[in-house]
Image (cartoon, rainbow, N blue to C red):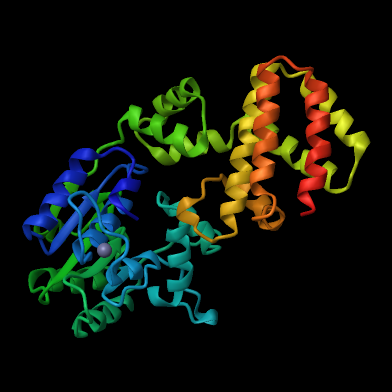
Length: 374
Ligand SMILES: [Zn+2]
């Protein structure tokens, strides 16, 4: 996570950059938000920036040894505390027992909610908390020698979920912090945090994201039309997760995804009848939607190509699309990706030029047949 990946929030971003550059880094900081505003990714970008060895004026370098370890979230001086579901039978009782799932989860999606994490853990109806057992872990980690970082970072996601024993231990640490240690807490319900912790932490309230910034992000990341993006952004009320939810559940998106799947299946199985039916169906939806569909197809091809590189921070798909990519992405490769994109772009051009849309889609199906087997 970099500052450049944060949606909006220029003011907080600048404040954090100033803090790092001036070396005035409070040892306990509490980021608060009402959800979906980006407090966690902001704190994470800040942690990276604090430890970057070749900091730029606006962001971390991305290349120094510290940044490389941050790419994997596997920096030896970066520790995470977060709510978990204790599964004794599987020996999952402290955060480190979940660390690989947690890293994968964070790398997959910069913006997330507690519900997303609960799903990831297969929590069912269980409540996630930070168990009292975690306090020994925290103390152990902070008593280690700092390996290499300028700042050892202890992340506490949702301190409101700390078991009281754990909260009290954390309080002791905040009162007498080990040298060069920064505790970054991110909370969505600060009212539930122990008052003594609250009063000792520097508070940074992350306001809802500006509508314009959300709209920009939707256009850039999900290729929405500006008008649709503004409408969704407006309804999202500064909450990026809500905006993404609104897209992923959109009927149009569902329809496009189904058509895309059908088109790829027809081409793969050389189903000429299916291709013709697809042409008939698409001819009936109107030119604007046809163009949107073809733009959407290009977006999915790109995302499926990137999917193969396992660089989730670059990947923008909703749940249904990602699910499909598990099986589909192997078919998009170095040998066909550019030709596939070209064919889709060409079809889009033809639609714009009023070429018979039945023919355009049928023809497209045939061409994909050749490309998809490469
Ligand atoms: Zn760096």
